[in-house]
Image (cartoon, rainbow, N blue to C red):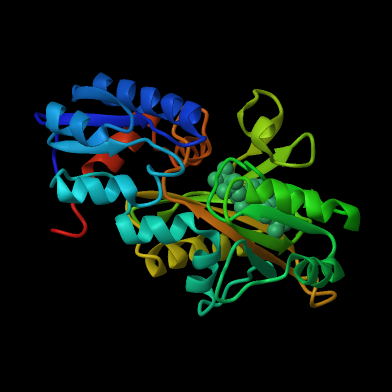
Length: 321
Ligand SMILES: Nc1ncnc2c1ncn2[C@@H]1O[C@H](COP(=O)(O)OP(=O)(O)OP(=O)(O)O)[C@@H](O)[C@H]1O
Ligand SMILES: [Mg+2]
């Protein structure tokens, strides 16, 4: 759709722990679209977002929100009800993608490598799981990585190398989500792949100087090195792109998404070649000019302005089209 003479709202901020990052993404998108002559209204999303939208009455919404309420299907559902076309994936696909456990379940039938995992649900009444038994089971598989099921930006995550560290790691993750995903820690090269409207961009390699791509490494200048295209073989590059496009279609994603992988030898199969292990998918990846998807787009000859415009042009209603 051409939204050139329409009223475009850029939704940013929001109520999640990634609010600050979202403000940066939103401002960058807003100014890129303004430069191209779009009529933009910035909306700093709060709990009264329904009233904000009814007041502004945009013709289309560019969602630059990350995390809870913005990336998990909630705002997408509200926009469907208000009949305002919006960028990116619909409510169901967004909700599944935000949930790392459900995402992996949805992808088990695809031929892709997934880190082995163990899921802990706190406070389940019908099927209570005993934390001590759970921990004993996990500890046979050190090293591990412990994550809240529905967070982003590495918030609440711990790498567990010693058995004494697991209880505290679970406690921290449980502060962020009642469901915790414990995964086998995969040592290897971290690679991320952007997909725009079903087409994969050149994979990007992430080299955090601290060794762990945590919140600080993600958002502090100079703490991480980014190499695009990633220093991997042409065969692996093709495999990563194919896998990313397959996941995008399988999960019914739209607009832009970024898929995170670790390229490693399968620890279950000694001596085998490197394979991409899928970690998770972000349906609203960071969109500052120095974020990863804009870097990959640039390597494919797509400027930040063009990227913002292409995402906007794909805006639609998904439930009630
Ligand atoms: N199984 C694993 N083995 C090794 N490292 C991992 C594993 N899972 C996650 N990591 C590391 O932790 C980082 C964050 O993990 P993940 O991408 O699952 O979470 P996130 O917080 O949702 O990230 P994002 O900021 O991309 O939304 C990864 O980029 C990677 O560096
Ligand atoms: Mg990630």
